[in-house]
Image (tube, rainbow, N blue to C red):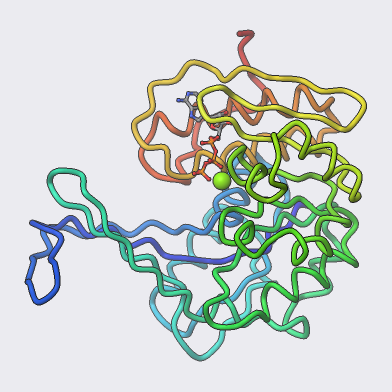
Length: 298
Ligand SMILES: Nc1ncnc2c1ncn2[C@@H]1O[C@H](COP(=O)(O)OP(=O)(O)OP(=O)(O)O)[C@@H](O)[C@H]1O
Ligand SMILES: [Mg+2]
């Protein structure tokens, strides 16, 4: 079983006539709701690929929380590790005008307040690997600290720190990194975190205790190493229409192949394949029909 541990957000995409400035007014033309959160998107993909999945997270006592749960239940993700609390669920309000300009307001809601007591030890124990992504940490450090604790007791840890955690700096992330099985950053994040070229940074990470590092390189594909072997793996050719969730889809593909005990180069190819397919569709969880068992030769 693969468990996710990260923020649960409902993306509310407001199509507006204009993005208002200070003291101005705009009008909403349409509203789309998309469940999101980085680890949550990856778990949704794994569930759609038939992997047994679970999630550790927190929702508020509101309609948004119900929608977030409903999407997981529809995909048969085990939700026993999702705590429901007084307060607001995480929401990202995304305003898009006719020219494609965007303004985003994030409400972390209850996401940041998951104490270690609230973490389901049953889910952690049952998980072969726990996939962790960043919390915004605007409403406290509880969830971040709980991830450190979980990294100590989990059988395996997969970690995509994203910019919010990279900005916390290397010292703060070391307690997680030393227990990390799979580190899944993009190039920019890894180079910022270690202050060096990504290939050298991979060696540093492995010296700290990480087993495998896969670095996402956008349309160039990815780079993967376990300290003994290294591979640059080219992306599949794609015609992107919506790159939201590309990194999360890569993680889903990589983890899918990893839990099938595939070689790192095959995990990397599967990550590239799933991400390349997902970006040709609208939405970060549009996995239906993508088959990670059926990857064409390049
Ligand atoms: N233009 C593209 N063509 C083909 N594949 C792509 C393209 N862009 C991204 N990918 C695939 O998606 C993967 C993840 O993309 P990227 O490197 O942008 O990750 P990221 O920066 O973590 O993304 P995110 O913003 O979603 O977190 C890449 O490793 C690659 O496999
Ligand atoms: Mg990313």
